[in-house]
Length: 358
Image (cartoon, rainbow, N blue to C red; front, side, top):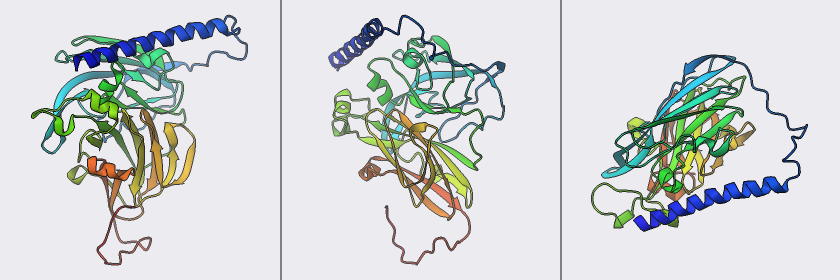
């Protein structure tokens, strides 16, 4: 296993060096690179007023919408923690996390904000960690600036230029191992005018886990690199564990309420076919961007990507959240939304008692 990881580390190091070399070559070949182009001015940055500490939440909770109508300095304090928790009934796994949970803390800022990320690596961690935020315009998304050894803290600042819903993750080599252990989360950059009002917002993030399967030794399971290369996981789950959104952990809403789900996919490998059984998404902001698609049944969420889905809970009952690559339900990709309310002519139960997935 050590030799495998050493080879992976060398591969990622070589890849990084290759990217840097390719950048140098491209710059030297581009005649426009030496002279600034008049039609490529720097973006206009809004004036900053005041400062605040970001409210961070663990899934499925989401911080409240941003009420201010101006850009400010926002401090985001994150901690990387390695800990053992249950991934499935009777199965413990050593997770690597942001903030002690999978997915990591939900971050909510406004377009134009200056965001300072302070990353602390818990002294009990065994390896260094960092953070690459897809919301960052700048080399590595902050990864190089935040390489943090156990017991230390690093920081960097960036301007949130583009609105949308973005993934963040650890990018220390081997990157797939850090992501595969659960080091990912979502950051929402609200547009300057804010998002439309809804009644409920929830944070749901899918991940696939490679734990050695039946060949794993007894005791706490660990990430299996060779299995991860096959892209055949033991578990595909929402919010870090089988059952994290079922039973007493189910999401809840009332009839008539508008629901918004911030859906991410940490991967490291699989694409999610996200679907809520019995609902049609009124709006889907695919890939976490600003363009809305309407009346969508199932939306693709790529590994390292996100989507915002919105719908109205018109009919009471239990709604299943699934990856409609449907056999993944047997690996844990199942959640529930419980909607309370009264009977409605929109849907009439014929009393047959049957049911299923569609």
